[in-house]
Image 1 (spheres, one colour):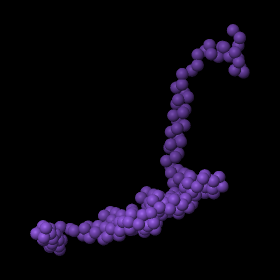
Image 2 (cartoon, one colour; image 1 turned 120 degrees about the vertical axis):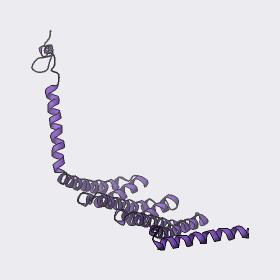
Image 3 (cartoon, one colour; image 1 turned 30 degrees about the vertical axis):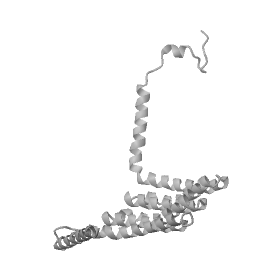
Length: 229
């Protein structure tokens, strides 16, 4: 057993030494390893919180929130190091929502937890849409919609109280109105071709439609009634 441990430890040290030598010589670019390693530490911290939850279940539900936060942060940092933070930074907004969602799913089933979850998830999705498609001018109504999403999740999980539908419909209508107006302004040049093409197709269909038989008109009077043959 001791000999096996000796060989494993020696092999690990040799591999680390080779990587350090070639990394410093510039033959291999290993900078990405460093960029991925430190987010893995954050993810490992998240798993320690999850292990603490499983060790003390069902009394360790409080560990789920930091576990979800650290897990989301670690994944966001890793994707940012591998690709670009300009694409993944909404993950930082999503992190508290993931922690609260874990708490709701595996611990405290209080429907009130879903309100901030819906709000933060919608805000993160709005930011991601605006960033990826460079469409902040049409994405910002999502911020108005975010409270409606949180309240709608509360409505679905808390007895479907009709009083919640009023602010949900108002906020949704306002956000959809602004979204439609800014979409029409942004895509006005495209919309005229779409609507113009629709009118052309309908017009051609009207012209090319097969006319009704002549006896159809002979059998009907001016008021649409039967002539009485």
